[in-house]
Image 1 (spheres, rainbow, N blue to C red):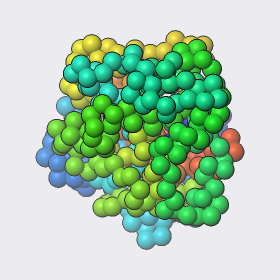
Image 2 (tube, helix red, strand yellow):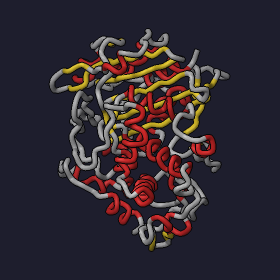
Image 3 (cartoon, rainbow, N blue to C red):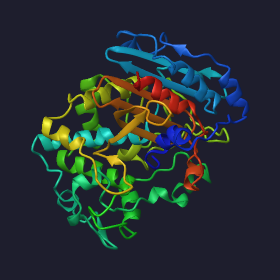
Length: 408
């Protein structure tokens, strides 16, 4: 998983700065841009059993435009009340020419974090821990040295990124085994990543600021295991995936492949990044899912079906720091603009997003729970992001898609 809000910044870049959009002239993209949108009809049986409806006005065109803007393939799910629609445009695999379909799996990257925070909130609701427990209580000796002190950091501060712990996945050299040597099976263990993090001084005193760090959620995963004495993936399976029937969602540990029907992911040069060890991301972003499964999870989460009322309030309580996003516990609150003109209505929504090798995705749910959009596009250039360059094609279609799905 990469930095938070990359897709959100991209969605609003043109609206906020008034820039024009140029589609990237790549052969694969030109082929993808010629593909028609598929609406309904091709999606998993579980989705087919539910009511399906035409997509919101403008969403098909926005998805098509996103492909024209430079993404080989785009898949989207939208819901208005009980009316659901699914669509896909472009191609899933530039080598074979396979079309993108709504049932295809993808790496959800940091969308994983809301699954992890949900499990910890459930454990608190059961009285098995408190979010105000120290990290040291559950992980003695793990966060120590160079000014890092687990005794001063709470579980809550891990989940809302106010711990100050350094994130080594921001370093280009961290990804050298993959991006330079193409060792796609290379394994980093969670504890290895955490050990690299605590070699650095903290960014600030715990609770004294906000900074997104994947290390926080690796530690959160270890807390789940310390409390339950089960693996974090098995707790996510037992508490969320199985009860909600999320049969196309998985949590690989070291397997670099995506199994079953799936999108292929690419960097900006068109290199296939689909095969990539998820080990370094673990509970910070290793999960695989579909737009339908991710939508079902977030519908249950944001309508209070998974947490007790006290924990639901904690989930949605956001940090209050200048320049920090309205970040809760693995979720983010945001205003979705319904148009680019001054004074346009803005819709209150909850968001999670994910950006990692080859894939960019977003899940949006309006605060009233009535509307949703889950969208994935199959380009994300990790190497470019590590050099602070744009990691995805510039796209006006992304902003239009969220407006079409969430606004009247």
